[in-house]
Image 1: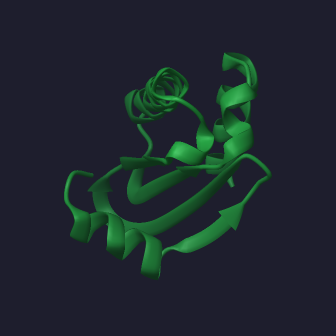
Image 2: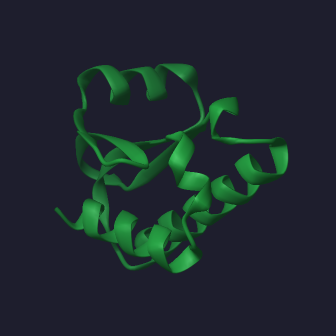
Length: 100
């Protein structure tokens, strides 16, 4: 997702589910490819931590898209505790949440 309108639509009309580290907004789109958007605020940490977290979340999203998932827009909002997760914890939690 690239435009503010796409993010806004997913956040306002999508189903919301929160975990202690991340909030997910999922908006169904029949027959369309899976698309991700990421929101990582300054509350998460410094620029290095925010960018590392964003790269990790994008990598998990890319794996899910390559695996053939389709049909929704997903906005992932990182909360302050998410920067302390290891790669395996973040990947496992995102996959489990998006498999629901």
